[in-house]
Image 1: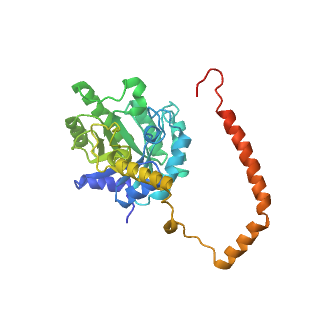
Image 2 (image 1 turned 60 degrees about the vertical axis):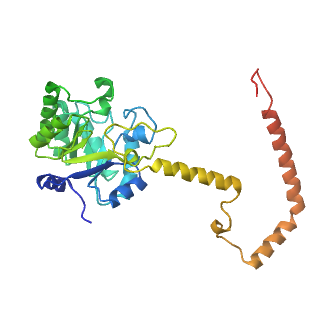
Image 3 (image 1 turned 90 degrees about the horizontal axis):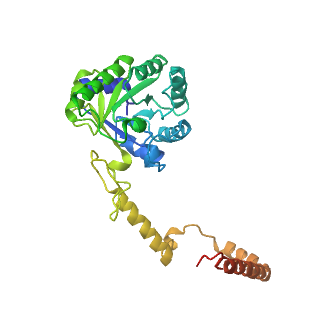
Length: 321
């Protein structure tokens, strides 16, 4: 199947066809996303929260992003591959720093493009430097998670007329700087639609209504990877859950645990490697030849372990066992 490019996304917008994008972080999920025919696979710095357990995206490093991008690259051949540039890798007034870091994501991780958050004049200058340096750039305005310390948390953006107009100006600025697409996150649908109509380049929405050129969701969220029947994982309001994979994972793990504890697994069916009868006899003879020595060794080790276990059971320093 033909590889998706930045130009083919622009063509889809012109023809009125919606763009599909999924955020994923590793080889198995990349295989699924690519085989499902998604246009864009974003390796997001949301990996910090979804896969690494951080509270925000800010701790994600460039080396960590490279690691995940390389895994995704090995699993996807058709989708356009876009990498988030992590917090602290592109914000400097010396835009050559951003260019050097972007080159690493392209050269070392095999990404097709990078994504930057924000639409200020300074950010547009950075985008222009990257594009002139040969790097395709996707913009991102609205809720910009890397700026959580400044915007005061994960909050919807553009809900006043003044701020909505500012978001439009930011998106236009990014387009003028050479960005090939812009993500609109957590903004009112009418604002996202107005921005989309004002731009030639595609917009991809997440929590931004149906008027954008395309939609993006996180792989783990949309498939319910972290869902559990007894304690549901928090889900963003904008995320439709297309599967309950977390429930199936829970059931599978519990069944494995029960099978091992009962002795049902592996059983003969899942113990495929056999010795022929002559080799079995030779092996039995080898075991018999030093059986007494191994028995003494076993008893000695058992005694040592029993003594260590008894020592561990002592209540020390007022701590009750």
